Image: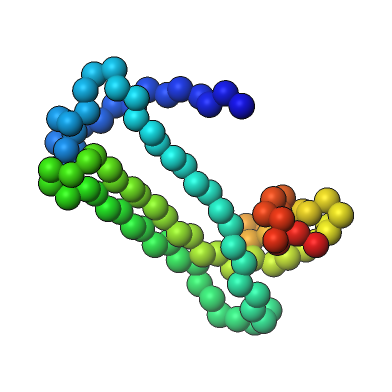
Length: 107
């Protein structure tokens, strides 16, 4: 599988950036996941968003991360164990579908 190339503009104030030389290849990773916590239908859970970030110490190899965690109460409307698909809706009532790709989570 060929990985896409992208151009990234990085502000000069980024810590340890002078260690990176023009033309060097850098690695950026993007992860996305979804988890579930089953609760009773009348659970008063509210939507939440949490942010996290970190940077390398001064003088260390350039590195950083940024992440978000969004928690939304949803209602499951269908579970298709043959296709490994779950359908659900949130406050907007729009039905969404996700494929369960992790073998340990599949039926």
